[in-house]
Amino acid sequence: MILAILDHHHGAIQSASLEMLTAARGLAETLGIELEAVAIGEGAEACVETAVSYGASTVHLIEHDQLDRYAPEAWARSVAQLSEDSSPEAILGVGTERGNEVMAHLAAVMDAPLAANCMEITPGDETYFVTRVRWGGSLLEEANLSGDPKLLTVAAHVLSAAPADSPPAANTSIFSPELDEKAFRVRVKELVKPETDKVSLTDAKIIIGGGRGVGSSEGFEPLEELAALTGGAIGCSRAVTNHGWRPHADQIGQTGGRVAPDLYIACGISGAIQHMAGCKGSKVILAINTDPDASILGKANYAVIGDLHEVIPAISEALRNS
Ligand code: FAD
Image: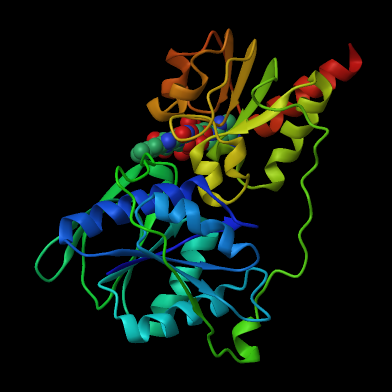
């Protein structure tokens, strides 16, 4: 059996989990074995219907009085205990920060290798042949994965999600793990809602896009300032979301959002085809880049060859003085 670990927020399954379930179902079908899913935390039972519609024949609900909120080691230990009796052929997680974190703990607990962020999984006799997305998608790695069970995460927002043509009958099982306090050393204590008064990416007439050249999450502060001055919104490249500098909701491109603002200011973005797929509808593109040979210069209407850390504050200063 293939076991898929769902990630969800109060029972709402993330799109990345649906993509992973689709990949897990494909793997189970290739191997001629069952797909089962496991959901942990508050609202887990609300995941059952969706997981079944994506082909899970059994959905295991983990019950524990301290497991309401996310706790990566406790989640991993719960899945490891669940797997002791059922001996899954492979365990798949979501290639998000949380999914990869849980699977890293699981790999340590089970002493098994983990292949993270896979976009292709081909099972062989002893090993799986996998293609992994690395370095913000600028590099694809081909690797062989061994281990019993095989541990993998499926790269987020790369594959399409599709429900099963003929879903199985719904079947749930409750599992109560034994967890000591140490398993909760890292856990979410409080959830803070994001600010809602900002202009959304889809509505914004001006978008300030930041790429790897921004350098850090703090490096976005001058971009935020320019966005506030122009009534614009912040977007970013996949390299940025992969670094964890901005949330995936800000990502523009093939595996992010599609935008069509009047003005797109691309700062420290090289102009990869996957990024341009999301912003080519912009009326005007202004690129700010230190590299005169960056491919975005061939797609931009205007360009400033220079360091964005100097150019952006200078634009803001000029706007404030105008
Ligand atoms: P880089 O390519 O590293 O470019 C950084 C740029 O910053 C360079 O041009 C550099 O000259 C410039 N720079 C550095 N420092 C400064 C400075 N101080 N001032 C000014 N300029 C500076 N990418 C996306 O963006 N969106 C997607 O949806 C997406 N989907 C993908 C899907 C798949 C299946 C794959 C394989 C890849 C995908 N990618 C996507 C990744 C894409 O191929 C690129 O790797 C990514 O867009 C690169 O991001 P970047 O331009 O920020 O970084």
